[in-house]
Every structure is written in C-alpha cells, then in structure tokens.
Length: 357
Image (cartoon, rainbow, N blue to C red; front, side, top):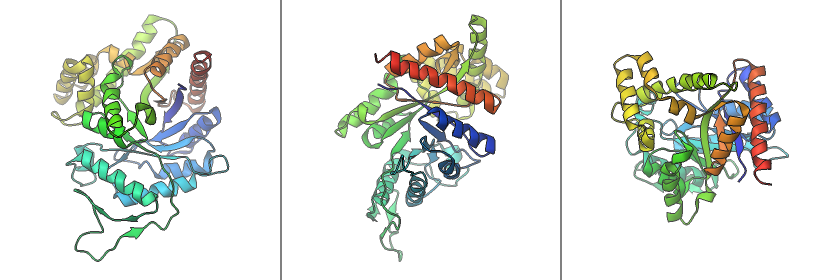
C-alpha cells in the first residue's frame, strides 16, 4: 500500500494559496478545504485550479443542507472542468460531503437536520444522476424533483457529463456503513491506529453488503504534525499542547447529548475523559477542560516527535490501512510551513520506498 499526503488548508489569502502551490510542487496528493460558518469550501478551489497542476482539489467538507443536491452537482461539474489540464484531462476535483451538525445546519443555514443519513443517501443519488447527464427525476423521502404540484419538469444538466469522486465524512456506525456502501472515499477523524476497527469494520460491512470491499474506498485520516527535538520533555510538552486543543471538540462541537466526536472517542476507551472535559467546558472552565484532556489523545491524534518517531507513526498509519494522511499547516510562516511539509514528504517517501522493497 502506498501512503499519500494531503493537506488541510483555507486558501483565502495570497500566502495560503502560495502554500498550496508549493505543496503541489512537492508532490502532495491532495488539498482539503473545509467550511464552517465563515468561508465556503468551493470558491477557493476555483482559484487553486488556476494555480496548480497535479494536486487533487477536494472539499473537506461541504455541509449537506447548505445547498440543494443539484446545485452541488453544478458546482462539482464546474470545478471538475476548471481543474482539468493536459496531465489530468478528466479534472482533479473530489467532492467531500458531510452532515455537519444541528448547530450549523439549523442555526446557520436554517435547514432541518433531521434524518441526516437519508439526506446523505438522496443527495448522492441526485448528484450522481445530474453529473451523469441524466434527466433528474427523483422521488425521495427528503427530495422530490421536479417539485410535486409545481410547474417544473425534469431537466438534464446543460454541462457535459463528468465523473467526480464523492467522499463522505462519517463517524457513527450507520453513516460509516453508508460510506462503505456508496462512497469513493472516507474522510476520517478521531482515528487511533490501534482501534482502527471501530471505523473500518462498519465501512467494510457497508461495502460488503453492496458487493464491494474496503479496497474500493479511499481511507483518508486527519492528523496534526509537529517536529520536535529528541528530548522526552519536548515531546510531552507538544503532546500536552495538542491535547488541550481537543477541549473545544469535546465541549463545543455538538450539544451535551449529541456530540459525534465524543461518541467516537468513547468507543476507543476515552468515554469518561471526554465526559469530564465536556462538563468542565460547559461550566465555563476552559483552562480546566484543556488540562483534563489526556496527553495520550494529543500524542495519538497527531504526529509529534523527532523525524524517527514520526517515521514510525507513519508506518503505523500505513499498516492500519490508511491511504491518505491529511495534515494542517506546520509553522507560523510560509517558509516554515513549506520546509516542514517537505520534511514530512521525505518521510512518506521513505515509508513507500523502504517498506516496499
């Protein structure tokens, strides 16, 4: 198995775009652009399509409920056309989608969050039909096209058909099984190599039920990365700092009773810890919440240490079945970010050459 490197980026400034251009030059596989309730994920990819040659251009992720499925298909067709070139005539766009959560979908977009799994299934059906050049007529539980009782009729996209990979960000069992059934890839978070089966077993079950295998789904996992010196104290300090950042995830990324991240960490042995962190966060003790996150989470969810240790961890991810590791920017300046990215690419190349000899 070949391990590839992706980057997470919000390319809304010249420096951020330059970072992705440098990543493309270094041979990075893909860039994943998120959206929350600020910048959207699709617009920056149009700019990147004009500045890059080989790197895959991916949403990581587009929030379902923020756009109609046919509007999503139109954007996907546009970006696939914009990203095509002589080296990649079919385009380089990957549509990463996810349900997000009620705080964003209902609070920001004003759309109902109910039945997110069914919404995902129907969205994929409609997007694929539209991109394939079919007349879009759909009678689902959530979407009906054309609108019943209206004056519209089934339409076919005016753009040429195109194939666009669809990847799903999922954490819960039902959504993971849907990923295995329908998706071209999984956008993973909260992933520890020793407990990879918590996610991969459900993806495999969904794939097998649809006559597929896990090998048909690209496994993409998000991590942080920080190069340190050799001393244990320096490594632990970095791990402690990264661990504290998860207090926001456990305390604010969802309601008290519905936090997908907390559920995922709970299934991997951290249930009591995330519950305690959430309680401190909701009580207003942000500092205490950060201190309560176990350092093992900071070290296990990130690549932290000197190059030899990071090389060891990269091999762990490769052996766990990960195809793409998705990392954020490493450093406070463009020069530092590019240097660290180059060092990480060298280590990935070592994994792929030495380990396959």
